[in-house]
Image 1 (cartoon, rainbow, N blue to C red):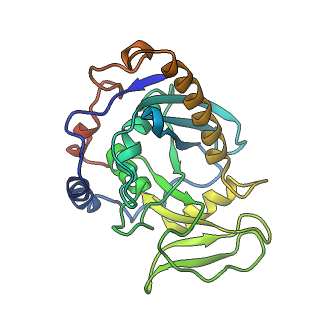
Image 2: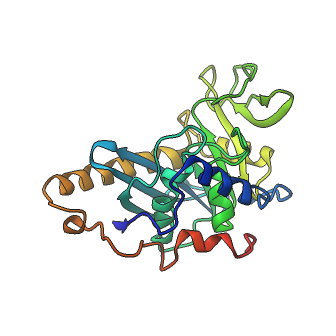
Length: 264
């Protein structure tokens, strides 16, 4: 398990966080289709919180795109880096998610976030933010439509309906199981919307949620339980492996990622 602290210079106010979103939003790449579904590697990322202990755990689980077998996994635990503000959740999660991704022993391929990309009030949710910082193709698959509207898709698996902000399509409601509540798919970075839906279907052979999300959710919850148990028996973060020094993100401060071009 990798330990991470809040990086120096990380936004601490709503205004500062929104300014970062405004500065990065224009870097989202929307003119690439993304990797073909059922090929390469697909990585799920998810986080779990213990607000009482000020802990957040992130997991990254790499699956083979064809077999959906686990190829690699990594976790990271840190202090919560931003207060809970709807629309700014990426600032609570990104430092620890980046640390988990950097701890993987192999390239992650497509990254699937349990959340939103363009389906976000500022058109820059976690999937888009993470994609721009890493240069990786990313999509968001959320459990609810957030602030957006949709007409229920037809009941068969694979049916879709536009997820709308007024008349603007920001994603799609996608039925991954017959007659089961849809999930809400949006583009993050370097993937088209139709391809994002196709990837989501390829990742849901037996359940409503993608296997990437299901496995990352279970892993980050386990990592949080282990960290909370260690924290309860320690006098300080340093005693249980949460260092006061530089963050652990593969030797790179997440803020240093704002400068280089986001295309690999």
